[in-house]
Length: 220
Image 1 (cartoon, helix red, strand yellow):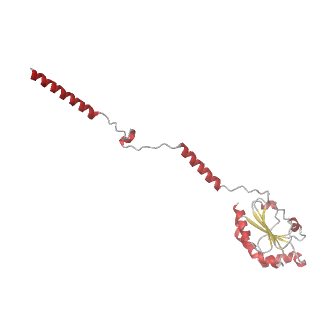
Image 2 (cartoon, rainbow, N blue to C red):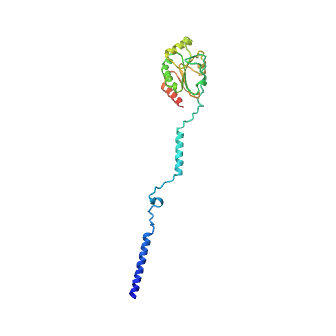
Image 3 (cartoon, rainbow, N blue to C red):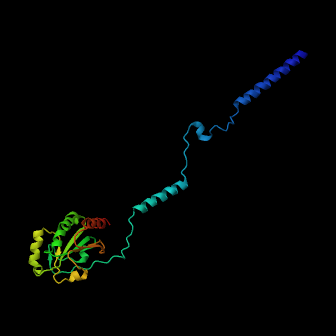
């Protein structure tokens, strides 16, 4: 009898140990290093957009646009060009300044027998040829120095001889010369699309600088 009870005790202990092992092997892991949620199934984890990052990107884009936008030019320092008035025009019908708005205009005061004026003609003619299609207008205001230069027929012959294609307003009474306060031949002014004088030059030279101004104003 005593041996039978001992066997029952041993059997009970064995059953208890077996049950404990079964519970231990079926319990979920509590290892903190294991991933949780969808990552356990191998799914991709999508990161939500960062609101601060979006705001920074938008600010950067606005800054780039501001850099690309042209600066507004303060034209209070410039004078408006005066009307070129003449009853006689060579190579053109009469032009009013209102006809020239939206164009870049070179107003060149010259006279056909002037040695310095003749030296500038290749450059001024080249500007007319290169930039007319882009919106440049050259006006060769003829203000005569000598008596034979006052003859309009002589002016026409000289214009034809020199191969000048741009408009030539005749300034026989020097009204335009006076209006622009000119002091010497040649003198040219470069006027922007809104009618402001942005550059002037007296005498020969600075052809490259003048052309850069023309290019800049055409681009505005």
